[in-house]
Length: 443
Image (cartoon, rainbow, N blue to C red; front, top):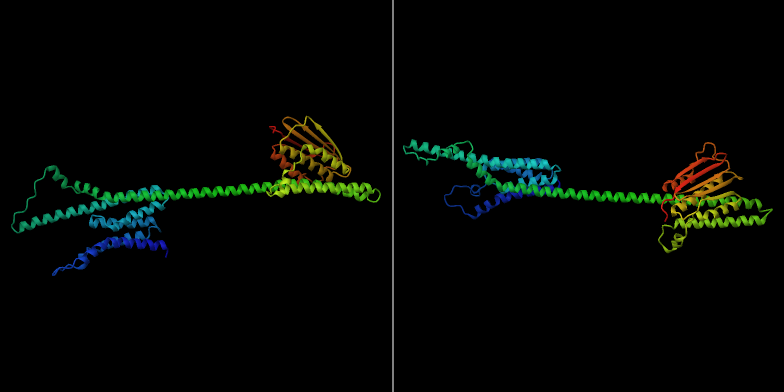
C-alpha cells in the first residue's frame, strides 16, 4: 500500500478521534450518578444514529483518497459534511475534511476553472445543508407547540395564546423558509466558507508555484540542451576546419614530395647532384608540412608547449609566390599574374585565398598530367578579391563531377565568407577554378 495512502488514512482517523475524544474524556471524568440510567456512550455524546456514522465514513474515505483521486474524495467528503450538517446544524472537527480535500484538489488540478466551480458548489451545498437543518428544526418546534396546545385543549386547560405579531411579521413567519433562518444560516456558515476559500487559495498558490518551478526546470533543461547542441556544433565545425586544413597541407606537401622523389629516383644514376637537390627539397617540404600540421593540432591547446605553434603566422596572399616557386622547383609550369593594387585583407580572406590557390595547384599537379601548366590570376578590388586558377591538362575524368574532398573544402571556405565559386572545364582544355571573395571593411 502506498505510504501517502496510509498517511492520509491516519489523518482521517485522527480527525475522528479529535472529534469524539473530548466527549469521552468528559464522560470518564464525570462519575455516573446513582439511579442514572443513561449509558456511557450517551453521556459521552457519541452519536448513535447510523446515518451520522455513514457520513463520517464518507468523510474518512474521502480524506484517505484525496491524493489518489481528489475529485472523488471531494464528492465523498462533501456528502459526508452535508449529512452531518443536516443532522446537527453545526460544524464538527471531522468536517475539516472538506477544506482539506478542497486544498488537495486545488493543489493538484491543472484546471483552475474546474476547481473554482467545485468551490462554489461546495459552498452552496454547505449552506443548503445547514439551512435545511434549521428549517427542519423550526418545523419540528412549531409541530411540538401545536401538539402541546392540542394536549392542553384535551385536558381542559386554556391554551397558551402566543403574543400577537404584526401582520407582516406573521406572514414572513408562515412562509416555507423563514427569513430569519436564511440570515442565521448565512452567519453560521460563514466560518466554513472562509475555511474553504482559504483552502482553495493556499492550494492554488502551491499549484502555481509548482508550475512555475516546473517551467523554470524545463527552461533550464532547454538551455542546457541548447548549450550542449551549440558545443557539439562548435566541436563539429572545429573538426571540419582542422580536417580541411590538414587535407590542404598534407595533400599539397605529399604531392610535391612524390613528384620530387620521382625526379630524384630518375636522376639518381646519371645526375646525382640533381637527385640530391630533389631529395633536399623533399626534406624541406616534409618539414614544412609537419610544422604546419603541428600548428593545426596544437592550436587548441593551452599548455606552453603549443604556444609557439599558436603564435606562428598563418599563410596568406603574401606566401603565394613562395608556393609557386616551390611547385616550379618540382618541374611544374606556373604563370602568376597579379592585377590591381594589393591591400591588407581580412585574415579569413587572406588565409582562404592562399588555401584555394594551394588546393587548385595541388590538384593540377596530381591530376592534370606530367606536362600540364597552370595560370594563377589574383585580381584585387576594393570590394572583392578574385582568384582564378586554370590549367591545360587533362581536365575532369569521364563521369567525374569535380566534387572531391579538396574542392569540397574550397566550396566550404567560399560559402563561409559569402563568396561565389565556379569550377569546371576550361574553354580550350584542362580545368578552371574561379572564386570571388568579398573583402568588406578593412581591418
